[in-house]
Image (tube, rainbow, N blue to C red; front, side):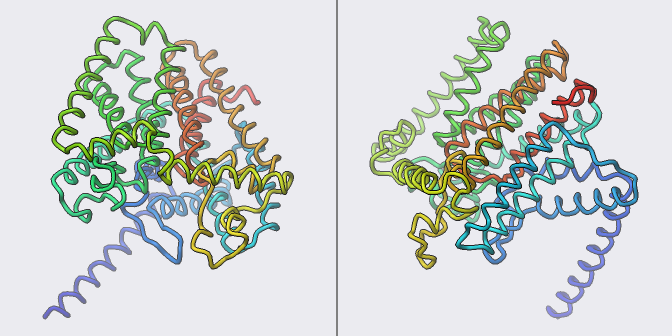
Length: 448
């Protein structure tokens, strides 16, 4: 009986899957912008759900991205679509060129090649998404999708915190073992992400959207609640990199928008919410006990820097990466080759998989100075375009979105000092929004 039910279920599943695939192909051939929306909605779905395959983690956005590239290519070949370049297309190709040169230095050519294709895949997605957001209406749809996705993430992060405080098993909370209260005395939420730092990195996208709309005068409960809860979750990650980036974000808001931020009403609102958050933390920590209180305080204030892998491990990798750059300053030691270099090219060493945890240093060490110069040049172009677009847009809604998203992007760049993964789809989707906003504001008339 059970076998019959299983076979029937498998048959129904196959039929449903084929029908869905047929519908997807048919719908996407007409208009595939919904795939762009789906990718943006799924940005935070990094670890849950995912499927490990031979050392590679297959994520929802990999599948959606492949579909997007496939149908975009079909439409290009049928001449239903024109290939559009933007102001960082050429610099990105230059960066890919130097990355490809570094492959010849690799001690693990196969793994380096896999990493290279991941970077190419991410850059192609950026190019396609930036070209598809060609109307204000499409951008407004994306804004709504970002909000919905953010609230789901916030709710799940809250569930992780409450569930772990109630000592629920990790298969229910979704927390990884090393981020439970048993380790830090306080659950470090990471929602669907692999690590708290990655969650914090993602949250700067919805945070910027909420702030932009508040600055536009849309002070409804969705934006105010979204701003408050997103800020709280960033601090709940207990990620020093995310918290530092948040402080930079706030300081830049104060600097560029003093009339909108430094008002009695706003300062009262912020101070009251900050006071409430501090009171809640104090109450929770008083319940946890002295040992867990000390662990939480040490993690937050860097008091444990001499004994934790988080700080000392990073400092050691920075030193090794700098040494690698000095040995091969032009070509680098090879993409995804820091681990072998750090272990003396002992490929059996368990530490052969370690990374630099600083994107700028990792590019410098693995790709060389030309790679870093191009990468920083791309960053400067993006920020310059942000300033120029805001100036041209004056005080329009699109200008406000571009301004706050550019400030949020700077916060993301601050976090790049604490992790090193170039092929993060979320960051390049963020860049695609900045590029498309600039194009919408300038009406494609100005080329950098």
